[in-house]
Amino acid sequence: MAVLILSLNSFAQQTPAVDSILKQAKLDIYEKPERVIKVGDSIFNDPKSSTEDKVMGLMLVSDAYSSKRDYQKSLRYFLTANELSKKSNDIGLQIKILTKTGVKYQQMQVYDKAIHFLDESDRLIKAHPSADPNNFTKATNSVVKGFIYKDQLNCDIAIGYFDRGIAEYKKAKTIMNQPNLSIAYYNKGNCYVLLKDFEAAKQSFREAIHYAETVNANSLKAFAQKGLGEVYYNEKEYEKAISVLQDAVTISKNVGDLVLNRGLYISLANNYLAVNNWEGYQKYNRLFLENQSIIRESERRSIGDSIDELTATNKQKLSEAKKQYYSIIAIVSLLILVSLLLLYKYQMRSKKALKMLNYEVTQIKAKLKKQ
Image 1 (tube, helix red, strand yellow):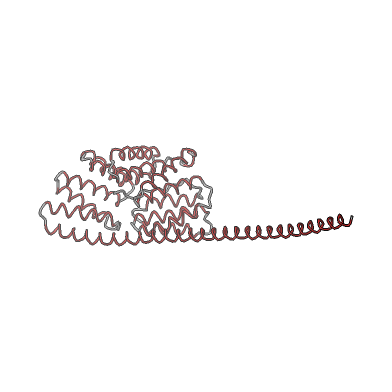
Image 2: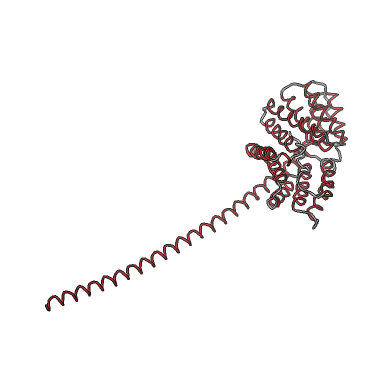
């Protein structure tokens, strides 16, 4: 499963103060999402914030809710940011919105749409390279494409995209790219697991742990440890798997990531079952089932909101189409009425002219008879 990747970078025209706040908030998205939400809201509600600042604030909140797996609220804030961004002529902001749209479609598994928006983002970056000075979004686009091909079980292609993204992130040599390097290596490791290349998988997960530790991102470290635990399980090293998974549960206990917890719980349950520890199996299997129920309810609400949004959009389009239809009918009716009126006048003039002509002919005939 693909972890949320940060696509928030400072290439839109923010004020220096807002730019500094965004850079710090970006590092806190995984560990302190509630704080990040407050920061994003404060930027959006600040009367001194520019349109670009407000858009970035909303996108920050959207990313924070995504890290909490609350896609219902994440989508709501993103749609607001998307509408507001249309008032800006900033190319960098347009590139960011295209990438974010691609990420949203990737999360919803609408892959053709996701690729379309990511390709559009790449096209604009190629045309305006200064809009992405650190190649951050270019790297992000590659990694998200890797997510898509991994989800489609085409890991050979996916690994190529992960490697491209990793190379671009490393070029920047900035601490803000460390979380994304961890994410890219984690997903690359998952690909190697699917390919049964467990040594390469372990190396990727260890790289993911390393980059997560550089920014104290416990949730990302726990994800990587979960992947490492899966490798140990496949190698029948059950005690090693339990040890690394239990550590992951400990360091991520305050994160509140439902998807992470689900993966850790089911992995622990399977490993305890493998070593005939029935008590451990029952404990973590129960936690897994409870967690799964919460996730399904959240997904159901998110799908409901998406349907409501689509329904509202279609109603608006239908209303506009009806207005356009009635306008056309009114114009056509008016043209027909005018045409009939002109035809009537023409006929009346023709009748009058014919009557005058007949009168003149009669007068001429009368004169001729008298002669």
